[in-house]
Amino acid sequence: MFFSADLLDEFASLWFQAPMVMSSRMQDLAVSGINGSTGGPAEVGQMITEKLSAVVESVMAVNLAVVKEGMIAVTALATGTCAGMAGASDRVAVAALQPYGKRVRANVRRLSR
Image 1 (cartoon, rainbow, N blue to C red):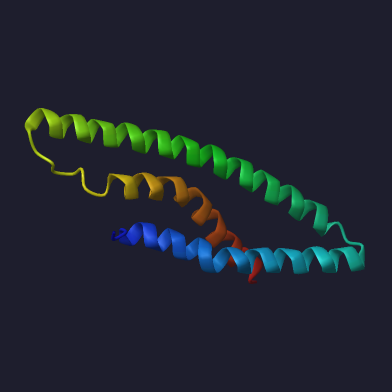
Image 2 (spheres, helix red, strand yellow):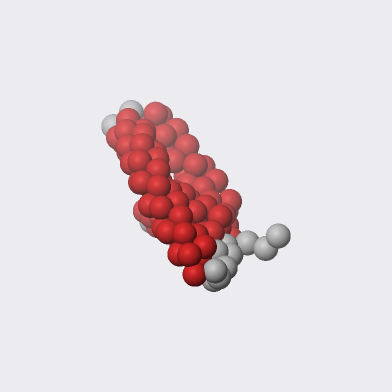
């Protein structure tokens, strides 16, 4: 089974960049705990907010992608062709992963400064 380039890109983003974000955040939390600064609780709040908004965005994107793929399937069935049906699962998976990948890439840029 071969995956689409978009799906591999999202997987690679999460696979390689998410651990960098996690380690950078843990380091920042440890430093703020030692210094007594207020940056730690703010970062924790931002992490929670990001996760919740990514979940909502992902669910909405998956629902939209499933409806689109259903319309493609109905059109293909009505016309007697299979055009456009290949890779439907990859497109739905990409729709599910994009909100997370977008946030991970933004965090890498923000935390690497």
